[in-house]
Image (tube, one colour):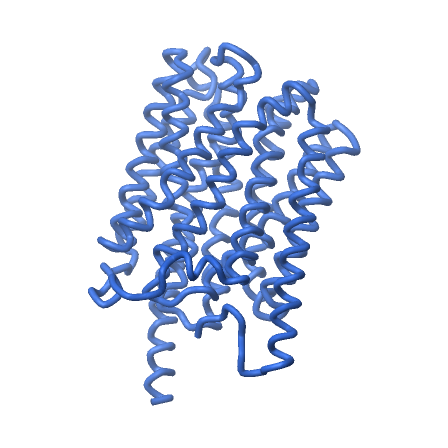
Length: 414
């Protein structure tokens, strides 16, 4: 029996490794979608919106699309397999680029917001790449699979902002219009790459059974994982969304802004080459705590000055912090569900994360316009403190339970 189990794990890891290569490539191409939107959204928004306070609405619509797409992505993956969801997502990515270019050419703020919403739907599907990489893998390989797919974002960090830099002036005087056309082409290439992912339709036995979602969500470990994700991603998004417009308001150039976003995205995904190994060695809770602490450090840097170097340092430290916190929280989520529960639990977790991001993102423009860059950074500290407190409490409870009964592992599903 042990030999059969070991053979199954070896086979599952081999399949997962093959998928990781394609999913990492798709992550790199899909990252161009978010990079283009984040680098241009608030600037285009400021030129098209009726009020400067609405400048970040296009990025907020992207985040709303992230939230709106998470549960349908889980439902489609559960019914038809992950590959079908991936193809639908890349189709939304192509529409994002084409509609975004059309909106800029015709100076339509509502159409531009629709384009970024479609970009959010594309992004919501891409968020499931990290979980798809872990399907069928052994418990030891799962954190590495998640982090390696996230590492594909390093190339997105280079590709996306450079794509903007090279193409933003092609269709003068329509700034960034051609950037969205190239983004649509990147989505088409991602579709071709994802066609080869080995992600079959779930077996009929996997479509039924499992615990109710509420029972799973009440586990202390799931609460801690979801809460840390809800804090890590929205706080990063709040600062990143505001940064390009804040840099413009401080008299810095578009090149400075593009450079900052580029290295922010590299910092978001670069540590993924090592995050999985760190999680295996030190445990996910410690890695999450370290990531949240780095996000707080980034906000502190943001409060210390408004030169280009201050903005760049803020964005880089923020990206590294997000990586540790978010990849670690994702690894914690994988410990809270059984195989037949994965699609609904993962989709619910992402819905919580991106739903809260949407709420925070819609307020970021108002915060920046009415209260300034310093207030945007100060908002980061209370949620980070809450996340660290809950994470410490749940980890302490688990250690006490393990001390009293070594056979008990609270919230861990074998």
